[in-house]
Each structure stands twice: as structure tokens, then as C-alpha cells.
Amino acid sequence: MQLSLSKSVQAATVLALLVSTAQAHEHHEDKIPEGAAISPDPLDTTLWVHILVQIFAWGILFPTGMVLGIVRSRWHVPVQITATGLAILGYLLGHAHKGRQFSKNVHAQYAPWLMMMVFAQAIMGIFLKLHIERGFMGKIRKWIVSGH
Image (cartoon, rainbow, N blue to C red; front, side, top):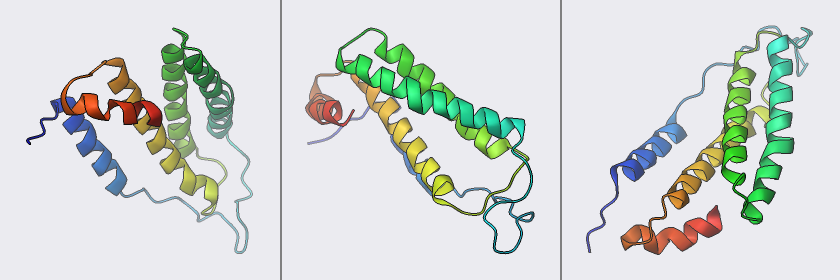
């Protein structure tokens, strides 16, 4: 039996594999005093925007979108797309700030995994929205429905 995958699924698979092997950039820790976890610098505006955007995306929009999905509201997809866009923006802002420096911590190590899960969730949602119900993709659809 020969499996034929669409080009978009193949591209998404290759991208997911490449993302998992990408090397992270160096985090600057030169201003952190010996034995401390953070530098004495104040939080800059970029970091405050990162915090507020992530609170809004993860604390309000994602849970609201999840409930809207459970009740099969037409607002589920737009709310989740908005939340995903804001989460990506917040993630990028977390890397772009120039103020206080932080040593390695759980927050910094968990964020990339969380973003990969958001990416996987979005890919599953797009797949389900395409309503592919024939062939191999139709057979794995029930698993994707439960995973999404």
C-alpha cells in the first residue's frame, strides 16, 4: 500500500522536524551578578508588553476559544487565530527585550515547547477545517479530532 500525502502535509512535516532541531540563540547573562537569578535592570516596555499580551492570549483568549469550540460556535476559529497570533507576537517580544536579564529557568525552557504545541494545534485545526475524509487522511482524521 502506497501512502500519498499532499504537498502541504509534507511541507508541514518537514517544517516541524526542522523546528525541533533548530538551535536557540544565545541569551545574554553578562549583567547578572554572581549567585543571582536576574540582573538589577528594570523591566523595559517591551517586556511589559510581552507580559500583558501573553496574559491576554493565554489567560483570556485561548480558554474562551476552547469553550467556543466545545459549543461549536462560529467564533471558535477567529478567536483561536487571534490568540495564536498574539501568542506568537508575545513570544517574539520575550526575545526582543533589552532590559532585565534572566538566568536559565523553567519559563524560558518551557516556552519553545508550548509554542510547538500551539503550532501543532493550529496544523490540526487547519487539517480538520479542510474536511478531508477519504483515503489515509480520512482514516487518521478521528485521531486528529481527539488530539485537537
